[in-house]
Figure 1 (cartoon, rainbow, N blue to C red):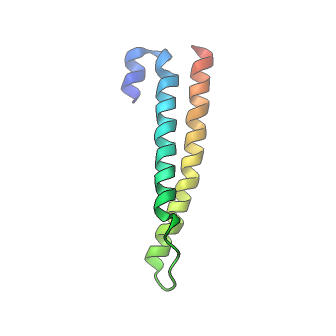
Figure 2: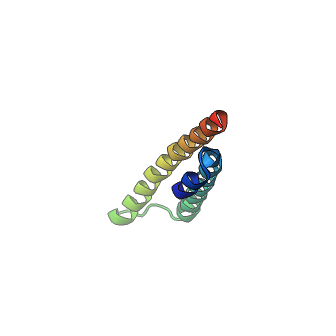
Length: 79
């Protein structure tokens, strides 16, 4: 995606940021849907750790999407 911004200049920053927000939201949605129907299992630490790590990843994806949204907004305001 960064090569698109370099090729088209600064005006592509909001487009690239929007595409990254969409991709981040899609990843968040996929991870949420995957673990939604899977309960934690007693005495199976690897499985439960996968659920916990995925929840950590989901929270990081939220921060990443917000960061891309601010970057796109900044690119829009400076263009």
